[in-house]
Length: 119
View 1: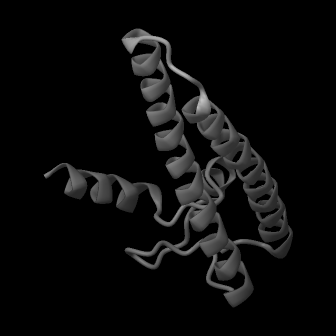
View 2: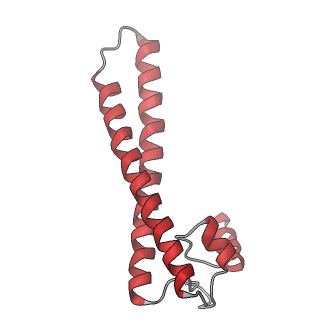
């Protein structure tokens, strides 16, 4: 179980990461829009712009998903359910939460979850 000061530290990490991601997604969206508004002079230019736009779009979607997970973790802090694995209901270790404060699963359940997705 997390101590109050640990939860507060992790909450601050979550808020900082969310702010960073919001800034990056805003910048990413601006770059995508700029790339798409550029005039392509030939097929190679068009292919490069399309590829860059796609890569930025994929990255932006990952960032938006991370923001959703951070928001979920922040709601869990408010509900006093933060740091509890969604699969086994055991506590998620502090070391894991320091690395990924929006973790939804303990290490063992995360591995099982990922193996289930590989099928």
